[in-house]
Length: 148
Ligand SMILES: CC(C)(COP(=O)(O)OP(=O)(O)OC[C@H]1O[C@@H](n2cnc3c(N)ncnc32)[C@H](O)[C@@H]1OP(=O)(O)O)[C@@H](O)C(=O)NCCC(=O)NCCS
Image 1 (tube, rainbow, N blue to C red):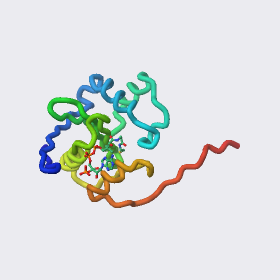
Image 2 (cartoon, protein in one colour; image 1 turned 30 degrees about the horizontal axis):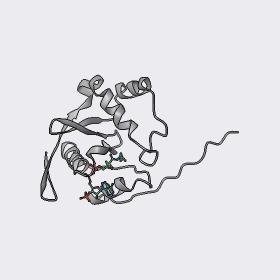
Image 3 (cartoon, rainbow, N blue to C red; image 1 turned 90 degrees about the horizontal axis):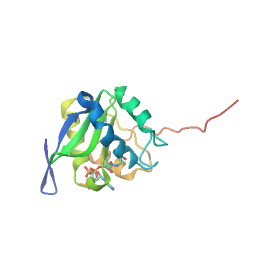
Image 4 (cartoon, protein in one colour; image 1 turned 135 degrees about the vertical axis):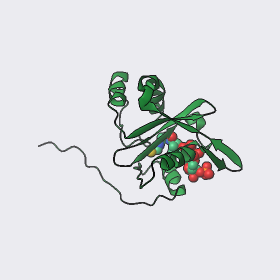
């Protein structure tokens, strides 16, 4: 898939993680370890490798792809069963247009309506979705845990 970014061409391809998921455990774990609490809404704490292996093996998403550019892994993208998109790009590969190109390719492969859940402190992610024409739908609050 080819996309223009400031006169430069961004070429990425998506590789299905579920076909060889054990090979992707390392890169996916490395991606997760780069995340800060502001970037994550699903993980507050880094899982162990065993927890991560169980999670990936449970096929939690409808589709899950590694993002390749120039034959190298630059990140990962998924589409959940509720049609939510999640995308992560390795820090040293950010701001090169890879997330935008990967989202456009995912939407081309699985046409329909899409959603994205974002931590309100995650400015990069908010800008990404807005630049792709996504509209703000709702703000969800979470309570502290209440014990009786
Ligand atoms: C959010 C994230 C996926 C963006 O990936 P990326 O490959 O750097 O994004 P792109 O280069 O495709 O940028 C597309 C647009 O997003 C916006 N954007 C991306 N990073 C940004 C940043 N750090 N600050 C402001 N805007 C940003 C810009 O509008 C950008 O377009 P532009 O470069 O023409 O201005 C990346 O920062 C990331 O992996 N963060 C950690 C994981 C995460 O937070 N994922 C989002 C949860 S779904």
